[in-house]
Each structure stands twice: as structure tokens, then as C-alpha cells.
Image (tube, rainbow, N blue to C red; front, side, top):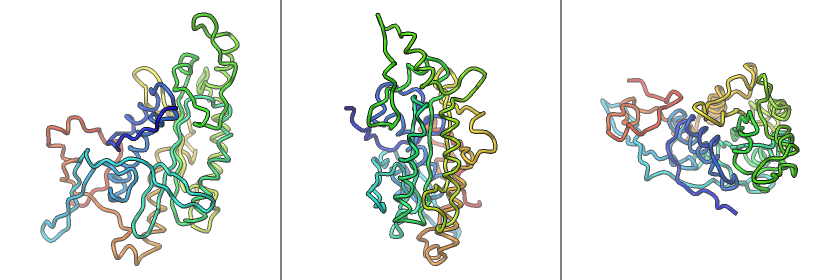
Length: 333
């Protein structure tokens, strides 16, 4: 059995995380295909969201320098790879404890925001088998923490051909509740049988000819859109505050890019609104709705000094830093 990836959190961009997912080879149970997405979300919560790195798991590789400039407090953000943390945070749920991929824990308030990440490389026909797991995870956490803002971010490998599907990371029995077809057999010297080819087309192709999306993915999208949009703490605890799914190109020069035509433009699952929805729900519950906590600085978000080294990029190391694919949360000059 592959060991879980314990690499420390790294500063990566969205395209880099998506590329790592789409081009990963080997087993998926080690989570190496989805870890870069955890890192991307953690770093984005810091840079765009303004949350302190010590409150985020996995801990982003940054540190904050605070100093007074003309009687104004400035928060200067520095990149420090040695500070990257590992692992997931264990949260006490109403039914059981749960390891959650990315967690914001505003001490001493407690866990206030969490994001669950899923990566699907094949076996799309049975995607709806994930529904029980997905609903249960959200419900479990909301029972104990009804004010917690919970997000769900799913990446799917946009296999277009049999070759794409065969090159996808191998599934492990414990990695996904979907079933791997027993028809996927090879004959002769590595030749794929006609029966196996048909099984792959039925189960593992995400985008068919004429850009037709696999029926299993369409059903999965329809189910998820009914599970998102939780606005207040008295709303259904089985709903997520924000959800997103994205199809990621697996091959060639476009590997890692997001397929633009799905979800449709009117879908609540578009990734473009995912993070802003998380921030808005957080502000409503833990800043505007908890003024005393905010006044004491326990839940407020930082605004970063625009002259922070990670933004000015005036060091030699900056040549290897990722390009931001979102707007950082900056203080007024």
C-alpha cells in the first residue's frame, strides 16, 4: 500500500496544482495527486483571504513581519519554505472525528472554515456513489460547528480518449467508493481487448465526441448544485456553504488547464465564485455577526503591505516563485 504523502506545504499556483493532479501517475491512495490542491487552497486563504499562516492547516510557507510605518501598522508577508507544514487537522464531528484537508482554526474561537478536496481520475459512471460520503461529511461537521464555513472542491480528469483514461492514475479500493470495472483487462502483449475498450469508454471518458460531457459527471453536477448555498447557521446542516467542480485537461501543452464549458455559466459550482463565497460567509458569521470577537482582533483578516517581498519580487529567488492567479488582499498605500 502506498504511504500517504507527508511533503510540507509548498507555494503553488492553481495551474501548477491542477497540472500535478492531471499528470500524476501511479496510485492515488498516496494522495500525491491531490496534495498540491491542498497547498494551493491553504496559500490562497493566506494571500487572498488575509488569514494568518499559523491558523491554517496545512501551514503555508510564509511568515508575517509587523511594524509601524508613520503610526500605521503594516503587515509584511515573507516567503519562507522552511515554515511549510504537513498533514490534515482532526475536527470533532457530531458523529465522529474527521480528518479535513484544509482547515482554518482561529484560536481560541475554534475551527471556522474548512475545505474538503476530492480528485477523480476515472470511473465517472458511478460518481453519484459519492453522495452519501459527501453529505455525511458536511452534516457531521455542522452538527458540532453549525457556524463553520465548509467548502467542497472537486477536480476531475478530463479524459477524452481511451489513451487518456489508461494513463490516468490507478485507483485503489480505499481511494474511492466508485467501482473499477472488471472488464478492463488486457490480452496478448499489453493489447487492450475490445470489451475492455468499451468498458473504458463507458466508465472512464469524461468528455466524449462533440464535447458531450459524460452522463455520470452531469448527474454528479446536478446532485451537488442541490447541496450548496448554505447562507445562515440555521439553514440545513447537510448543505455546504460553497462547492466547486472543475474538469482538468490531462495531456499535451494544455495539461492542467480547466475545461471552460463545464460547469455551465449559470452553475453555482463555478470555481470563479468559490473563494469569494467562503470569505463572505466567514465575514457574515465571524466578523459582522460577532462584533466583539472582531473588535478584539480574534477574527479579523489581515491586509498585506503592498511592498511585501512576495509582491515586489525584488529578490533573485523570486524567479522561481509562482505567478498569482488571484488578487491578494492588500492594504491601502
